[in-house]
Image (cartoon, rainbow, N blue to C red; front, side, top):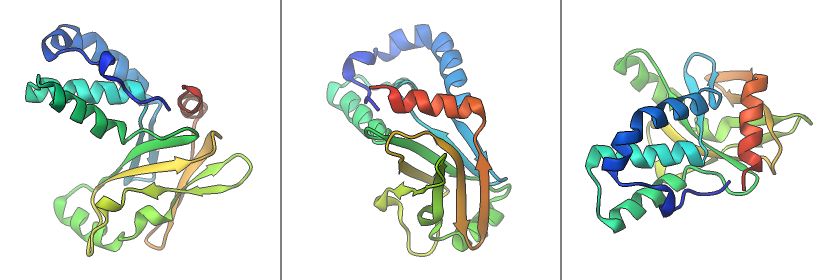
Length: 185
């Protein structure tokens, strides 16, 4: 998947003028890349358009103008994207209350190693996780993952963690969106 380049980013004042239309478009793009697996896992698959939006939003919020700081944001957010044949996503682990979330995140330690995507031929592709996020006693509620599908489009996402065993099949719209991301150079 192609990374966001500096030439795609506009200054925050120009962005503010275009923000409403850009936001509307990106929310449509994100809709088919938001995949719920059960009640507590939401996978947000990223592409260059969603990453560009996040960089612009950060620049707007922080009033970033220094060139090195802009490039830092681009580099940071580009890490969310998969390389060729990979899909990158943010996993949100969601529970209703902070107390329940704290208990569950301790129980779910090791979850990223138990997540997978299922391909049409039946192969399970394990998630590759960001080692910088691994804690000793509890899981972070936000995880950055990649799935090296070799360019094949997933048909399902799942978990075989002892405390969270489930699988969700992707809709045709979700599969189409991920296919587009995998074929965008």
